[in-house]
Image (cartoon, rainbow, N blue to C red; front, side):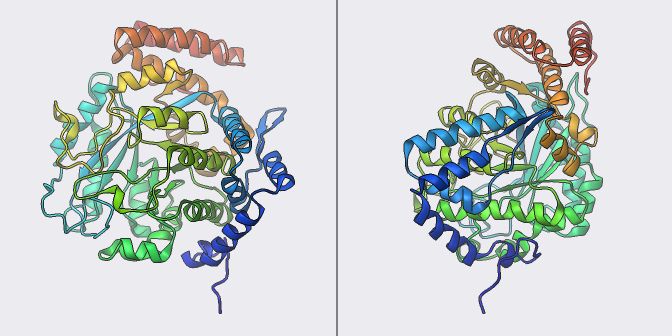
Length: 483
Protein backbone atom coordinates (compact mmCIF):
# COMPACT_ATOMS: atom_id res chain seq x y z
CA UNK A 1 0.00 0.00 0.00
CA UNK A 2 1.39 3.44 -0.92
CA UNK A 3 1.77 5.93 1.92
CA UNK A 4 -1.12 8.42 1.71
CA UNK A 5 -0.56 12.18 1.47
CA UNK A 6 -2.21 14.09 4.31
CA UNK A 7 -1.17 17.66 5.18
CA UNK A 8 -3.00 17.32 8.51
CA UNK A 9 -1.14 14.18 9.51
CA UNK A 10 1.45 14.36 12.28
CA UNK A 11 3.63 11.77 10.53
CA UNK A 12 6.48 13.17 8.45
CA UNK A 13 6.15 10.64 5.63
CA UNK A 14 2.50 11.63 5.21
CA UNK A 15 2.71 15.46 5.27
CA UNK A 16 6.03 15.41 3.35
CA UNK A 17 4.90 12.67 1.02
CA UNK A 18 7.34 11.41 -1.60
CA UNK A 19 4.63 10.15 -3.97
CA UNK A 20 2.87 13.54 -3.82
CA UNK A 21 6.13 15.36 -4.55
CA UNK A 22 6.89 13.07 -7.50
CA UNK A 23 3.38 13.59 -8.88
CA UNK A 24 3.76 17.35 -8.37
CA UNK A 25 7.06 17.43 -10.27
CA UNK A 26 5.57 15.36 -13.10
CA UNK A 27 2.55 17.67 -13.26
CA UNK A 28 4.79 20.75 -13.28
CA UNK A 29 6.92 19.36 -16.08
CA UNK A 30 3.86 18.44 -18.14
CA UNK A 31 2.22 21.87 -17.68
CA UNK A 32 5.22 24.22 -17.54
CA UNK A 33 4.33 25.66 -20.97
CA UNK A 34 0.56 25.79 -20.41
CA UNK A 35 0.09 29.51 -20.95
CA UNK A 36 -3.52 29.59 -19.74
CA UNK A 37 -2.67 27.74 -16.51
CA UNK A 38 0.36 29.92 -15.83
CA UNK A 39 -1.68 33.08 -16.35
CA UNK A 40 -4.30 31.73 -13.95
CA UNK A 41 -1.68 30.92 -11.30
CA UNK A 42 0.01 34.31 -11.61
CA UNK A 43 -3.33 36.09 -11.35
CA UNK A 44 -4.14 34.11 -8.21
CA UNK A 45 -0.77 35.06 -6.72
CA UNK A 46 -1.13 38.79 -7.22
CA UNK A 47 -1.99 40.85 -4.08
CA UNK A 48 -5.47 42.39 -4.12
CA UNK A 49 -5.99 45.87 -2.65
CA UNK A 50 -8.73 46.04 -0.06
CA UNK A 51 -10.04 48.90 2.05
CA UNK A 52 -7.66 48.20 4.96
CA UNK A 53 -4.73 46.67 3.13
CA UNK A 54 -3.85 43.88 0.75
CA UNK A 55 -5.02 40.29 0.56
CA UNK A 56 -3.06 37.40 -0.93
CA UNK A 57 -4.29 33.87 -1.52
CA UNK A 58 -0.83 32.35 -1.90
CA UNK A 59 -0.21 29.25 -4.00
CA UNK A 60 -0.25 25.51 -3.41
CA UNK A 61 2.99 23.55 -3.71
CA UNK A 62 1.75 22.21 -7.04
CA UNK A 63 0.85 25.61 -8.49
CA UNK A 64 4.17 27.11 -7.39
CA UNK A 65 6.05 24.13 -8.84
CA UNK A 66 4.53 24.83 -12.26
CA UNK A 67 5.91 28.37 -12.13
CA UNK A 68 9.33 27.16 -11.03
CA UNK A 69 9.43 24.64 -13.90
CA UNK A 70 8.56 27.23 -16.53
CA UNK A 71 11.64 28.46 -18.44
CA UNK A 72 10.19 31.43 -20.32
CA UNK A 73 12.19 34.58 -19.34
CA UNK A 74 9.06 36.70 -19.73
CA UNK A 75 7.20 34.54 -17.20
CA UNK A 76 10.17 34.73 -14.85
CA UNK A 77 10.07 38.53 -15.00
CA UNK A 78 6.36 38.44 -14.13
CA UNK A 79 7.13 36.18 -11.18
CA UNK A 80 9.82 38.60 -9.97
CA UNK A 81 7.48 41.57 -10.34
CA UNK A 82 4.69 39.91 -8.35
CA UNK A 83 7.15 38.78 -5.67
CA UNK A 84 8.37 42.35 -5.21
CA UNK A 85 4.79 43.62 -5.20
CA UNK A 86 3.85 41.17 -2.43
CA UNK A 87 6.90 41.98 -0.36
CA UNK A 88 6.18 45.71 -0.51
CA UNK A 89 2.48 45.17 0.21
CA UNK A 90 3.07 43.31 3.48
CA UNK A 91 6.58 44.24 4.62
CA UNK A 92 7.06 47.58 2.91
CA UNK A 93 10.63 48.64 2.12
CA UNK A 94 11.91 47.52 5.54
CA UNK A 95 14.67 44.94 5.94
CA UNK A 96 15.17 43.45 9.40
CA UNK A 97 18.79 42.98 10.50
CA UNK A 98 20.19 40.27 12.77
CA UNK A 99 23.41 38.42 13.54
CA UNK A 100 24.20 34.79 14.34
CA UNK A 101 25.98 33.97 17.60
CA UNK A 102 27.78 30.63 17.67
CA UNK A 103 27.92 29.21 21.19
CA UNK A 104 29.57 25.83 20.65
CA UNK A 105 30.79 23.64 17.80
CA UNK A 106 30.79 20.41 19.78
CA UNK A 107 28.54 17.99 17.90
CA UNK A 108 27.85 14.24 17.96
CA UNK A 109 26.25 14.04 14.51
CA UNK A 110 27.92 12.81 11.34
CA UNK A 111 26.37 15.25 8.83
CA UNK A 112 28.40 15.03 5.63
CA UNK A 113 27.95 18.72 4.66
CA UNK A 114 28.88 20.34 8.00
CA UNK A 115 32.42 20.87 9.35
CA UNK A 116 31.16 20.29 12.89
CA UNK A 117 30.63 16.57 12.18
CA UNK A 118 32.17 14.47 14.91
CA UNK A 119 34.74 12.76 12.65
CA UNK A 120 36.41 16.11 11.85
CA UNK A 121 39.38 15.84 14.19
CA UNK A 122 41.36 18.86 13.00
CA UNK A 123 38.77 21.57 13.69
CA UNK A 124 39.32 23.10 17.16
CA UNK A 125 36.34 22.39 19.40
CA UNK A 126 35.18 25.30 21.49
CA UNK A 127 32.32 26.12 23.82
CA UNK A 128 31.76 29.60 25.21
CA UNK A 129 31.65 30.12 28.94
CA UNK A 130 28.97 32.48 30.23
CA UNK A 131 31.60 35.21 30.61
CA UNK A 132 32.66 34.64 27.00
CA UNK A 133 29.00 34.82 25.93
CA UNK A 134 28.76 38.13 27.74
CA UNK A 135 31.83 39.47 25.91
CA UNK A 136 30.46 38.33 22.54
CA UNK A 137 27.16 40.09 23.28
CA UNK A 138 28.93 43.31 24.21
CA UNK A 139 30.87 43.15 20.94
CA UNK A 140 27.60 42.67 19.04
CA UNK A 141 25.94 45.50 20.96
CA UNK A 142 28.88 47.76 20.14
CA UNK A 143 28.17 47.04 16.47
CA UNK A 144 24.51 48.00 16.97
CA UNK A 145 22.73 44.65 16.90
CA UNK A 146 19.44 44.11 18.75
CA UNK A 147 18.44 40.69 17.41
CA UNK A 148 20.48 37.48 17.53
CA UNK A 149 20.11 33.93 16.28
CA UNK A 150 22.04 31.60 18.57
CA UNK A 151 23.59 28.46 17.11
CA UNK A 152 25.10 25.35 18.66
CA UNK A 153 25.99 21.83 17.60
CA UNK A 154 24.05 18.89 18.98
CA UNK A 155 25.89 17.38 21.94
CA UNK A 156 23.91 16.29 25.02
CA UNK A 157 27.03 16.43 27.20
CA UNK A 158 28.59 19.72 26.09
CA UNK A 159 25.50 21.56 24.87
CA UNK A 160 22.53 20.34 26.95
CA UNK A 161 19.34 22.39 27.03
CA UNK A 162 20.43 23.82 30.38
CA UNK A 163 23.50 25.35 28.72
CA UNK A 164 21.36 26.93 25.99
CA UNK A 165 18.97 28.33 28.62
CA UNK A 166 21.87 29.77 30.64
CA UNK A 167 23.20 31.45 27.49
CA UNK A 168 19.80 32.99 26.71
CA UNK A 169 19.60 34.35 30.26
CA UNK A 170 23.10 35.78 29.95
CA UNK A 171 22.35 37.41 26.59
CA UNK A 172 19.18 39.11 27.82
CA UNK A 173 21.00 40.21 30.96
CA UNK A 174 23.76 42.20 29.24
CA UNK A 175 23.04 45.96 29.27
CA UNK A 176 26.00 47.81 27.81
CA UNK A 177 25.82 51.58 27.24
CA UNK A 178 22.65 51.98 25.13
CA UNK A 179 22.84 48.39 23.90
CA UNK A 180 20.41 45.57 24.58
CA UNK A 181 19.65 42.35 22.76
CA UNK A 182 15.88 42.45 22.55
CA UNK A 183 15.15 39.22 20.71
CA UNK A 184 16.99 35.89 20.79
CA UNK A 185 16.04 33.42 18.07
CA UNK A 186 17.26 29.87 18.56
CA UNK A 187 18.67 27.50 15.96
CA UNK A 188 19.43 24.23 17.73
CA UNK A 189 18.75 20.57 17.02
CA UNK A 190 15.32 18.98 17.20
CA UNK A 191 14.33 18.29 20.78
CA UNK A 192 11.44 17.34 23.04
CA UNK A 193 8.17 19.13 23.79
CA UNK A 194 9.42 19.64 27.36
CA UNK A 195 12.58 21.35 26.14
CA UNK A 196 10.61 23.53 23.74
CA UNK A 197 8.49 24.64 26.69
CA UNK A 198 11.70 25.60 28.50
CA UNK A 199 12.82 27.64 25.50
CA UNK A 200 9.44 29.37 25.39
CA UNK A 201 9.68 30.21 29.10
CA UNK A 202 13.17 31.61 28.50
CA UNK A 203 11.66 34.20 26.15
CA UNK A 204 12.96 33.10 22.77
CA UNK A 205 11.67 34.68 19.58
CA UNK A 206 11.63 32.23 16.66
CA UNK A 207 12.70 28.59 16.82
CA UNK A 208 14.62 27.87 13.63
CA UNK A 209 15.46 24.43 12.28
CA UNK A 210 16.65 23.75 8.75
CA UNK A 211 15.39 20.52 7.29
CA UNK A 212 18.58 20.29 5.18
CA UNK A 213 16.75 18.01 2.70
CA UNK A 214 13.18 16.73 2.51
CA UNK A 215 14.23 13.74 0.39
CA UNK A 216 14.14 10.93 2.98
CA UNK A 217 16.64 8.65 1.26
CA UNK A 218 19.11 11.49 0.72
CA UNK A 219 18.54 12.72 4.27
CA UNK A 220 19.48 9.35 5.72
CA UNK A 221 22.55 9.09 3.48
CA UNK A 222 23.72 12.60 4.46
CA UNK A 223 23.12 11.92 8.18
CA UNK A 224 24.67 8.48 8.67
CA UNK A 225 25.17 8.72 12.44
CA UNK A 226 23.96 10.63 15.47
CA UNK A 227 20.50 11.63 16.71
CA UNK A 228 19.94 13.83 13.67
CA UNK A 229 19.87 10.69 11.50
CA UNK A 230 16.24 10.13 12.56
CA UNK A 231 14.34 11.71 9.65
CA UNK A 232 10.90 11.56 11.26
CA UNK A 233 12.02 13.03 14.60
CA UNK A 234 13.78 15.90 12.83
CA UNK A 235 10.99 16.64 10.34
CA UNK A 236 8.27 16.57 13.02
CA UNK A 237 10.17 18.97 15.30
CA UNK A 238 8.09 22.05 14.44
CA UNK A 239 4.93 20.31 15.60
CA UNK A 240 6.57 19.54 18.95
CA UNK A 241 7.80 23.14 19.17
CA UNK A 242 4.29 24.48 18.66
CA UNK A 243 2.92 21.95 21.13
CA UNK A 244 5.49 23.34 23.57
CA UNK A 245 4.02 26.83 23.14
CA UNK A 246 6.47 28.36 20.67
CA UNK A 247 4.38 30.60 18.38
CA UNK A 248 6.95 31.40 15.71
CA UNK A 249 8.96 28.76 13.85
CA UNK A 250 11.37 29.13 10.95
CA UNK A 251 11.82 26.62 8.12
CA UNK A 252 14.63 26.20 5.60
CA UNK A 253 16.43 23.71 3.39
CA UNK A 254 20.09 23.64 2.46
CA UNK A 255 19.89 24.05 -1.29
CA UNK A 256 22.44 21.99 -3.15
CA UNK A 257 22.07 18.74 -1.21
CA UNK A 258 19.22 17.43 -3.36
CA UNK A 259 17.47 18.43 -6.60
CA UNK A 260 16.05 21.89 -6.00
CA UNK A 261 12.58 21.24 -7.43
CA UNK A 262 12.07 18.40 -4.96
CA UNK A 263 13.24 20.55 -2.05
CA UNK A 264 11.05 23.45 -3.15
CA UNK A 265 7.90 21.29 -3.19
CA UNK A 266 8.76 19.72 0.18
CA UNK A 267 9.38 23.11 1.78
CA UNK A 268 6.00 24.43 0.65
CA UNK A 269 4.29 21.23 1.79
CA UNK A 270 5.80 21.73 5.24
CA UNK A 271 4.42 25.27 5.32
CA UNK A 272 1.00 23.97 4.25
CA UNK A 273 1.15 21.33 6.99
CA UNK A 274 1.81 23.94 9.70
CA UNK A 275 -1.08 26.05 8.42
CA UNK A 276 -3.42 23.03 8.26
CA UNK A 277 -2.60 21.71 11.73
CA UNK A 278 -1.77 24.81 13.77
CA UNK A 279 -3.59 27.54 11.87
CA UNK A 280 -0.39 29.49 11.29
CA UNK A 281 2.40 28.93 8.78
CA UNK A 282 6.13 29.49 9.24
CA UNK A 283 7.16 32.86 10.66
CA UNK A 284 10.28 32.72 8.50
CA UNK A 285 11.74 30.71 5.63
CA UNK A 286 15.51 30.73 5.07
CA UNK A 287 17.22 29.93 1.77
CA UNK A 288 20.84 28.88 2.48
CA UNK A 289 23.05 27.16 -0.08
CA UNK A 290 25.89 24.70 0.55
CA UNK A 291 29.12 26.64 1.02
CA UNK A 292 32.80 25.80 1.42
CA UNK A 293 34.01 25.15 4.97
CA UNK A 294 36.73 23.25 6.83
CA UNK A 295 36.63 19.63 5.65
CA UNK A 296 33.69 20.44 3.33
CA UNK A 297 33.92 20.89 -0.44
CA UNK A 298 30.62 22.10 -1.93
CA UNK A 299 31.68 20.64 -5.29
CA UNK A 300 31.23 17.20 -3.72
CA UNK A 301 27.48 17.80 -3.88
CA UNK A 302 26.24 17.59 -7.46
CA UNK A 303 22.98 19.52 -7.00
CA UNK A 304 24.34 23.06 -6.82
CA UNK A 305 22.14 25.75 -8.36
CA UNK A 306 23.17 28.86 -10.30
CA UNK A 307 22.37 32.33 -9.00
CA UNK A 308 19.57 32.86 -11.54
CA UNK A 309 17.75 29.72 -10.41
CA UNK A 310 18.34 30.61 -6.78
CA UNK A 311 16.72 34.00 -7.34
CA UNK A 312 13.70 32.37 -8.99
CA UNK A 313 13.30 29.92 -6.11
CA UNK A 314 13.15 32.82 -3.65
CA UNK A 315 10.60 34.68 -5.77
CA UNK A 316 8.38 31.60 -6.05
CA UNK A 317 8.54 31.04 -2.28
CA UNK A 318 7.55 34.66 -1.71
CA UNK A 319 4.44 34.44 -3.88
CA UNK A 320 3.49 30.97 -2.61
CA UNK A 321 3.82 31.89 1.11
CA UNK A 322 3.21 35.65 0.96
CA UNK A 323 3.05 36.38 4.68
CA UNK A 324 6.25 34.70 5.80
CA UNK A 325 9.49 36.53 6.53
CA UNK A 326 12.29 35.47 4.19
CA UNK A 327 15.93 35.34 5.28
CA UNK A 328 19.22 35.42 3.41
CA UNK A 329 22.52 35.32 5.27
CA UNK A 330 26.11 36.33 4.68
CA UNK A 331 26.67 32.94 3.04
CA UNK A 332 25.83 34.88 -0.12
CA UNK A 333 27.74 37.69 -1.80
CA UNK A 334 26.68 41.32 -1.85
CA UNK A 335 25.69 40.91 -5.51
CA UNK A 336 23.45 37.91 -4.85
CA UNK A 337 21.90 39.52 -1.77
CA UNK A 338 21.13 42.69 -3.75
CA UNK A 339 19.19 40.67 -6.32
CA UNK A 340 17.37 38.64 -3.68
CA UNK A 341 16.17 41.77 -1.89
CA UNK A 342 14.17 42.63 -5.00
CA UNK A 343 12.25 39.35 -5.04
CA UNK A 344 10.97 39.06 -1.50
CA UNK A 345 13.75 38.81 1.11
CA UNK A 346 12.78 40.69 4.28
CA UNK A 347 15.60 39.80 6.72
CA UNK A 348 19.40 39.82 6.34
CA UNK A 349 22.34 39.22 8.62
CA UNK A 350 25.10 41.81 8.81
CA UNK A 351 28.65 41.88 10.13
CA UNK A 352 28.34 38.13 10.78
CA UNK A 353 30.99 35.79 12.09
CA UNK A 354 30.24 32.06 12.01
CA UNK A 355 33.05 31.00 14.34
CA UNK A 356 32.69 30.31 18.06
CA UNK A 357 33.88 33.44 19.88
CA UNK A 358 34.52 35.28 16.62
CA UNK A 359 33.10 38.69 17.53
CA UNK A 360 35.65 39.42 20.23
CA UNK A 361 38.56 38.76 17.85
CA UNK A 362 40.00 41.77 16.02
CA UNK A 363 40.78 39.68 12.95
CA UNK A 364 38.10 37.37 11.58
CA UNK A 365 38.97 33.83 12.78
CA UNK A 366 38.43 30.94 10.37
CA UNK A 367 39.41 27.87 12.36
CA UNK A 368 35.97 27.27 13.93
CA UNK A 369 33.74 28.70 11.18
CA UNK A 370 30.70 26.67 10.17
CA UNK A 371 30.93 28.05 6.63
CA UNK A 372 32.82 30.66 4.64
CA UNK A 373 31.26 34.12 4.92
CA UNK A 374 30.90 35.59 1.43
CA UNK A 375 29.66 39.04 2.49
CA UNK A 376 32.29 40.26 4.95
CA UNK A 377 31.19 43.87 5.19
CA UNK A 378 30.73 45.55 8.56
CA UNK A 379 27.24 46.18 9.92
CA UNK A 380 27.65 49.90 9.19
CA UNK A 381 28.45 49.11 5.55
CA UNK A 382 25.41 46.82 5.30
CA UNK A 383 23.15 49.49 6.81
CA UNK A 384 24.43 52.10 4.35
CA UNK A 385 24.08 49.66 1.43
CA UNK A 386 20.46 48.93 2.31
CA UNK A 387 19.63 52.64 2.42
CA UNK A 388 21.44 53.27 -0.87
CA UNK A 389 19.07 50.73 -2.40
CA UNK A 390 15.94 52.28 -0.92
CA UNK A 391 15.48 49.87 2.02
CA UNK A 392 14.92 50.90 5.64
CA UNK A 393 17.31 48.96 7.91
CA UNK A 394 15.14 47.84 10.82
CA UNK A 395 16.32 46.72 14.24
CA UNK A 396 12.73 46.39 15.45
CA UNK A 397 11.68 43.64 17.87
CA UNK A 398 8.41 45.23 18.97
CA UNK A 399 5.99 42.54 17.76
CA UNK A 400 7.74 39.86 19.78
CA UNK A 401 7.78 41.97 22.94
CA UNK A 402 4.21 43.19 22.49
CA UNK A 403 2.89 39.66 22.07
CA UNK A 404 2.20 40.02 18.35
CA UNK A 405 3.41 36.51 17.54
CA UNK A 406 2.00 33.37 15.96
CA UNK A 407 -1.56 33.67 14.69
CA UNK A 408 -1.89 37.20 16.10
CA UNK A 409 1.02 38.41 13.97
CA UNK A 410 -0.26 36.57 10.91
CA UNK A 411 -3.76 38.02 11.25
CA UNK A 412 -2.32 41.54 11.48
CA UNK A 413 -0.01 40.85 8.54
CA UNK A 414 -2.79 39.39 6.40
CA UNK A 415 -5.04 42.38 7.10
CA UNK A 416 -2.27 44.83 6.32
CA UNK A 417 -2.54 46.37 9.80
CA UNK A 418 0.99 45.37 10.79
CA UNK A 419 2.36 48.21 8.62
CA UNK A 420 0.90 50.73 11.08
CA UNK A 421 3.35 49.41 13.67
CA UNK A 422 6.31 48.21 11.65
CA UNK A 423 7.03 51.32 9.59
CA UNK A 424 7.38 53.79 12.49
CA UNK A 425 9.11 51.16 14.64
CA UNK A 426 11.69 50.62 11.91
CA UNK A 427 12.40 54.35 11.71
CA UNK A 428 12.75 54.71 15.48
CA UNK A 429 15.15 51.76 15.77
CA UNK A 430 17.12 53.10 12.82
CA UNK A 431 17.44 56.43 14.67
CA UNK A 432 18.82 54.55 17.67
CA UNK A 433 21.43 52.92 15.47
CA UNK A 434 22.37 56.24 13.85
CA UNK A 435 22.84 57.98 17.19
CA UNK A 436 24.75 55.24 18.95
CA UNK A 437 26.76 53.34 16.34
CA UNK A 438 26.74 54.76 12.81
CA UNK A 439 29.62 56.38 10.95
CA UNK A 440 29.10 60.06 10.07
CA UNK A 441 28.36 59.17 6.42
CA UNK A 442 25.80 56.52 7.36
CA UNK A 443 24.26 58.82 9.95
CA UNK A 444 23.69 61.54 7.34
CA UNK A 445 22.11 59.05 4.91
CA UNK A 446 19.95 57.64 7.67
CA UNK A 447 18.40 60.87 8.84
CA UNK A 448 17.70 61.89 5.26
CA UNK A 449 15.84 58.61 4.82
CA UNK A 450 13.96 59.00 8.11
CA UNK A 451 12.77 62.49 7.16
CA UNK A 452 11.49 61.15 3.85
CA UNK A 453 9.89 58.02 5.30
CA UNK A 454 8.13 59.83 8.15
CA UNK A 455 6.03 61.54 5.50
CA UNK A 456 4.81 58.14 4.30
CA UNK A 457 3.17 57.25 7.63
CA UNK A 458 -0.53 57.59 6.78
CA UNK A 459 -1.96 58.23 10.27
CA UNK A 460 -1.23 61.75 11.45
CA UNK A 461 -1.27 60.80 15.15
CA UNK A 462 1.17 57.92 14.63
CA UNK A 463 3.44 60.15 12.55
CA UNK A 464 3.47 62.85 15.25
CA UNK A 465 4.35 60.35 17.98
CA UNK A 466 7.12 58.84 15.86
CA UNK A 467 8.56 62.28 15.10
CA UNK A 468 8.59 63.18 18.81
CA UNK A 469 10.18 59.85 19.78
CA UNK A 470 12.91 60.27 17.19
CA UNK A 471 13.55 63.79 18.46
CA UNK A 472 13.90 62.37 21.98
CA UNK A 473 16.32 59.70 20.73
CA UNK A 474 18.47 62.38 19.15
CA UNK A 475 18.47 64.70 22.16
CA UNK A 476 18.76 62.22 25.02
CA UNK A 477 19.63 58.65 25.96
CA UNK A 478 15.98 57.61 25.89
CA UNK A 479 15.58 54.43 23.83
CA UNK A 480 13.21 51.58 23.03
CA UNK A 481 10.13 53.44 21.89
CA UNK A 482 7.64 51.19 20.13
CA UNK A 483 4.13 50.93 18.80
